[in-house]
Length: 438
Image 1: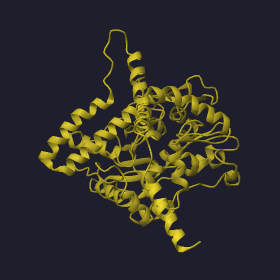
Image 2: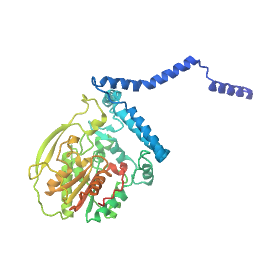
Image 3: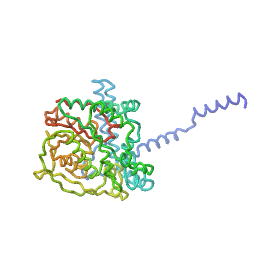
Image 4: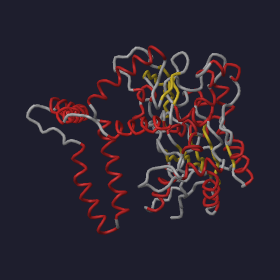
């Protein structure tokens, strides 16, 4: 092909790419189709919302209406604090509106459970939060990411996590080491010892319930690569660690399970084994005074689905995953009342939902039968408890700090603080420093 022919072809291609022969009616028609497609979902949502409103009542305002006061507040913030602060506030408001639209979507509520149920039945597919394992077992994705991900103390990982989070929030503090060491120092200043209790997540004990490839690793702990380094560093800094791993493996005997099949948490028998060993550890290490209380217990049977089934958002009528049946042992104090935390007790347990799963009735697995209750039962001594179901890396410490700042000294009389948190917090938690000085 001659040079002139190549030049001609190139010029022709440029003309065709830069000039579209489209009649105005066709162009406007395509624009109308595009806009109509974009509006189908919100208009359908609005129609369904109005249809579901109670007769004669006022339907809830559209979530998008919430952007109007947010925009006005952003304008005031721009005049007061500058454009950057206003932009961050507006971004936060937009995020809240998007979340509300997603949570209140009629189409999501109707369509997602049906699609999820068919995908789970056909190919064993979970969603962005829950993975399906073997024989009806479910696993929290965050737990799997923790045990299979890179070492959480690697400098690259710490840098990437520190750059994460939302633009309008303070950057997360990813490194647990300095925070745990500082917490120990603050407690030691008051003559209180700290016992750190990182609680293994389900894949650590039961990898074989997720994949056949883990069948040969039944008694091998699946832990994050940085876990051993963390515990070594903490011990070198003078901190004490209580590791429940051996008790959980013992509870996961032949044919048994240490964790709930459809939930992120441990089974009552596994927690009982941990509470018993923890009580022995505390009595051997610390002078907690003479036995002062004799608690009683009452067995209660519970049957339900776990939190992972809720996260899957399956239809209410689903039969793919069966409910679990467990027996918890409620702790009764000498006066015949359900156990309650005792401020001023020699042991203060700071915990997360692993502490609360059989204590907090809102979680559905019973009440007054959790880790703190069973610990007090075995110690035969009062125990204080501050447990928050989420944010184990900071929430319980912040709750303690709020009590101290508000004039309630939860550390008065405390000899040892047991700090329990799920190990996933080591790689995913926000390890904020929290001063606890009153």
